[in-house]
Image (cartoon, rainbow over all chains, first blue to last red; front, side, top):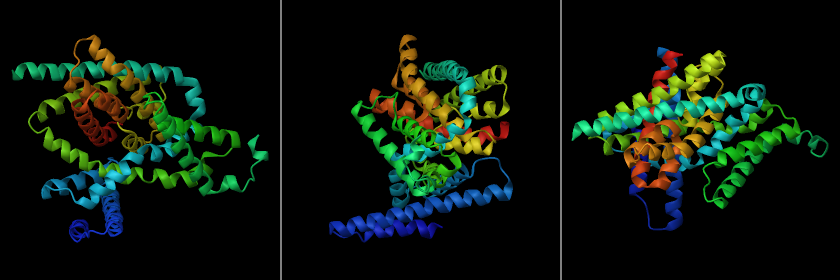
Length: 142
Length: 233
C-alpha cells in the first residue's frame, strides 16, 4: 500500500520540461491518487465487514488515510492531486443523490414547512453554544 | 407529455441521464457565476431542480435514472476518503488552540443536532425522518453515508443539508453581528459547524481567516458525526 503511494512522488521527480509530457505525468499521477483513494475506500469496506462497526466505510477509509499521512507526516502528491481534482466537482456528484427526493415527494409535501422551521430553529442554539464556548475559552486564556 | 416527443429507448439509457445531470450541473454553475455566487442558488440546487423536473416531465422512475446517476454519485466515496488531507492540514495549523476549538465543535454541533432531532421526534414522529435529521449539519457526502448507515433516507438527508447550509449561511453572520459576538473565529467556526460547505463558501466571502476556521470546523464536524452518530441511532 505504501509502495503505491510512493509511485506518485517518484513520478513527479522524473518530471521533464516538455509541457505535454508534464501533463501526461500529472494525469497518470492523478490516477495513482484516485487508485490510492479507492484502496482506502475498499479497506474501509473490508474493516467494516470484519469488525461490524456502524461507521460508514468511507469514513473508516478516511481515518486510515489520516493515520498513514500523520505517521509519514507528509501527504503523497498523487493523493493530494486526486483529492483536489475531485473536491470541486462535489456538487455534480451530489445531484443524483438529491434527485432521489422525487421518491420522497409525499413526505416533503406533508412536512416541508415543518422541516424548514426545524432546520432554522435548531441552528440558533448550535451557534450560541459555539460562540459561548469560544468566548469563555478566550477569556480564561487571557 | 414530453414522452410523445422523445423515443422511449432514450429515456432508458444510462448515458442519457448522465448527459442530463452533467448538463444541469454546467447550467447551474453558469447561472451561479452569472448571479455573482448567490448563496441561495448553489449549482447543486439548480442542478437538482432541473434533473427532478426532467424526471417528472418524462415520467422516468428514479431507479432508471440512477443507472446513469450512480456513475457520478459513486465518486462521493473517494471524496470522503480524500477529506483526510484538509483534516491533516487543519490539525497542523490549529494545534495550539486545538482543545478549545474541538470543545466548541463537539458541543456546538451536537447541540444543533439534538435540538433538531428532538423537534422532529415530537413534531413529526416518523423514525426514518428523525434519524435522517441527525445528519443535517454535516457536508453532503458524509451526510449521505451516515443516512445509508443508519437506515435513514439519503435523498432527504441531502435535502436537509442543502437547506441547512443555505439558511445557515444567510442568518448565522447576521445573528452573531446582532449579538455583537462577530469575530473571524466565532463566525467562521459557527458557519463550519452549523452550515458546513455552504457556510464555508460564505465564510470565504467574509475573509481568509473566517474561511480557515470554517473549513476546519466543517471537516471535523463531519468526521466526528460520522463516527459518533451511527452508534446512537
